[in-house]
Image 1 (tube, rainbow, N blue to C red):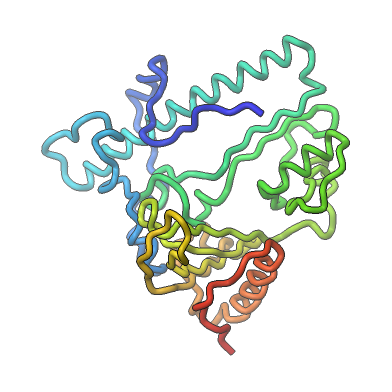
Image 2: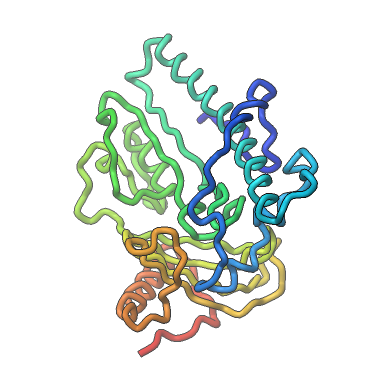
Length: 303
């Protein structure tokens, strides 16, 4: 396993990449000017906005004088995103060095190479930096794998895989028995184009560090291939590091087919009543599967 310096705050790039993108403007994401309406209070309450929460250490330069608020936000975004991309360029450089080494040693065909991360990241999406929320940009992770002896080059799968599936997969390819105690499942058949009929179509997520980082509310939820249900229970529950300051619990439901940017909460829309019932049942099933418990104050499922 080969780790890199993560492109974390305050995003300090290698000197050789310090001027990369200097004369370019990086496009802002579609949700850069999100107003946080039509959603739970958690989105507006979060303190990780590009326009107001990046500090002098992050920006590394004083904000130019005479800018309007809109211009200042755009300027800060360029400072942030360029330094982030410069840091990631160093990751790219060193991944290339590893691949070149495998080729030079003649062992590329016998080596499984995986490129992934521990989570996604907001790159101006919803006006944010950082992560933690169950929204797509934070929840989803990159996953690339190369193994010429078994996995077709250029193949792409839309099936759902989870990071708990990594260890069973590696053991499977190594010919080692997978312990029954593992939560995940080998994704080898998925990678080789033989997805089982009973492959997972839903996943569970929980963020428990209530208000500890960027004022993000504690929440859990379920994501299926089309929908996402999130419950902000917004309570520290006595967990170490969480802030003991409860907020009003709220639900969010997103139809990812109609609303891929997750801008409109349809939890209370009568047209989605059956979806809510189904997803809350699936949420409970997944919690039981991993040994988690629902929040004691969770409101009962409506009739």
